Image 1: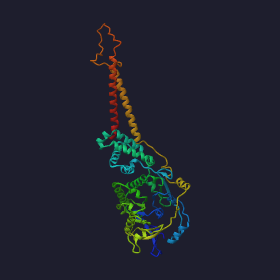
Image 2: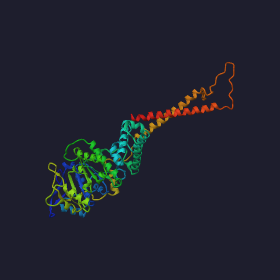
Image 3: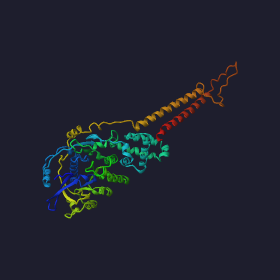
Length: 520
């Protein structure tokens, strides 16, 4: 059943349930993207697993998210269970060999895999705005913050760097607005509150260094197989916006860093985006346009993107049009929206005269799907009703001990597991503020000392106040002051108050002069 240059997905059936033919995904079209849809419990995860196995054996690295925790079994040898052996016999898969695959486990929280991070700067203002659900005004302030950081040499690595920069912007909003555009203190405050919420939700684990290197999810083994990077997402799914923002950032990084390769014989990387509906829920138009652009252009960089979701309506039409390889598991049709989804899914396939797609979609069994892949010169094949092949790896999760064993022998062990906090915006702004305060204090002290020297020993005199002492002619003694007269003390106190005011103003001018240099 296996053919060179193709991934075996399953075997299609004729209307009388007899074997029709093997259904394959050609490697040269693996970077033309794909869609895996179906209701809960219909077999989407197993389809993802057998596709990941096929790409790995073909030497193609894979990145996928383990939303439910059961995809981790791909790192262990499969087991000869009765229902798996029965499926192999049904589709004529002989021999049915079991296999374990090279897996690298990742986890934003560092609990079930290697820590994976990025910096605030690499995330950029657009994705950060999406993560915070920022308004247009708040997004504008974030764009200004990134520009100030770039021009002022202030690296934005983690949340405290951005918080420190926003504090500076709020305190100097008037001056900065003249140069960069209006900065609302209320918008700055709102962003600070959103950052606090993100921090409480665990986003501080995601931002920092060492940042993930794209090459570490594109590894191959010594025997030529592609490494399968599995992101532990069961806990991450408690914050869906962080989950989708991370995957979208990773996709954007791939798009920006990888060179153009045209149409290779096989993909350089295959990226599975599970629970894809979360990406597009309430997404602003600019973000959807960004996703469409990346999906359309990243193909020429050798990356295939496969969206996994329950309903084909979850994916915008502009993105759906870019997905050439499709696997449709069973859908329910109880509500008007579900009925529309069934019709949409049926209409996207190249019709098969042997059956009605819309009727079959609602009657598919578990592990059964309608499949259409690109063939020939890139045209979609006729849709076929297909029994999905059983996986060669374990169907089910690894134990904690098995997972830890895989992590201990990982090729990236020790590269990302420890935090590294180098000097960045937070430390630089703190140093500049401290230096400004020292200079202001020195100026105040210098002003006071100068005033004392001018007064001739600390006593102030003002012409016209009757406090100027005239020297008596030679030979005469100075007239003693009246012991009960306090006019000189009052004047002295008044002038010391003036001196303190002048020193304070000088100090403030110095602080503005130093911190103001950030915006030049």
